[in-house]
Image 1 (tube, rainbow, N blue to C red):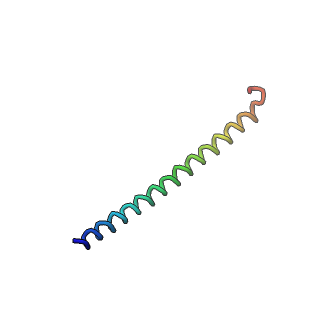
Image 2: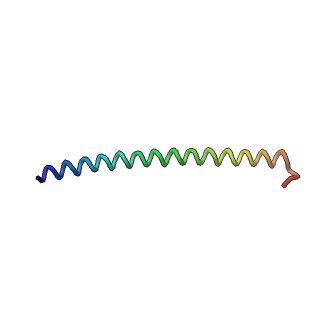
Length: 56
């Protein structure tokens, strides 16, 4: 019975490790997308300010 508990613990640990790695991957992906959009926004607004300096 004790060995059965160890087997269950190792399975849940492997599942948690896979889940944790998945969350790390998702966080990196979201961070990359957010930074890409932020850079596009900065460049876009800089271009607008450069093209229309009297508008602002």
